Image 1 (cartoon, rainbow, N blue to C red):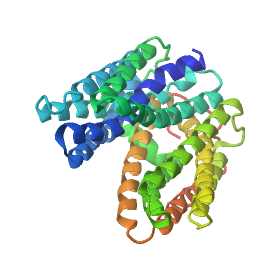
Image 2 (image 1 turned 60 degrees about the vertical axis):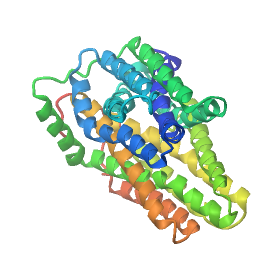
Image 3 (image 1 turned 180 degrees about the vertical axis):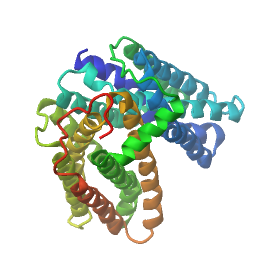
Length: 392
């Protein structure tokens, strides 16, 4: 499959998921005049993915036609968002149930699809660079699409567009050729326990998972910290959008560069350097040297997240036996999502202290993620694919 084909299949459902976190709160305000309900609905649409991730991974590892399961998850997401469009016109429990369903199937097209990218794109370094690009495109384009549609139409239209995106992404996934991981012979429950045991018990993978999860604690708090910093510096909370946009653009440019010139250094070193550089520039942004300095520093911090993400995806694949690979990806993605949400909550508690200190603290979390990578075994052969039955 071509790289464009992979992006056409992977970006739409991920875009729909990212955009829904913006569209749903707007819809709740417009239809129910309830900001709090919007937060509850977003949490309901994200929360189930963490619990479902190990089971989704186990199912994908055993599936003979994984593309059909991933495509089906896109169709269910489209249907769930289509139902949510009628918030305020149908019973609230129906909307809640549909969003729970959307959250439960999200691991299929998030971490689950990532576990097959090396099958879709032959060059592994470039394959994971394109997967990182897919995530970055989705994170930027989803909210942007909602913002544009919401300027001219009610929020129902924005959510309807996201449902359509998930639908067309499912069609693209159904056309992909994904090789089965061929995991079988044990129950789903035992397979889940074996997968979790591998993530926690295989030291190199445990270090990669821990460091990448910790980094999301920082990234999750960035938007909240940006609001506090903007109020402190300019008195205008809306200026935070410039900082968040700068970070997103930096991440996107970094991801594009990785697809053109993939980093050839050892992936653990790339992860460490990327986390450290992101943390350093985030700390630099906390210095009161003018608005331009803050925007540029935050943008540069975003650039280095792309190489770290690409290296992380590469290591997830290399450090997992084929029969457990989807579990490693779905659980890893679920942990990162949880840490992101926790980071936002943590930043909310600390912003009353000082906006600049909160931003600097977020930078220190990235630096701590880099420090955690020093626990990666120097003798680990991360260029060698683990065999099917390996438990190393």
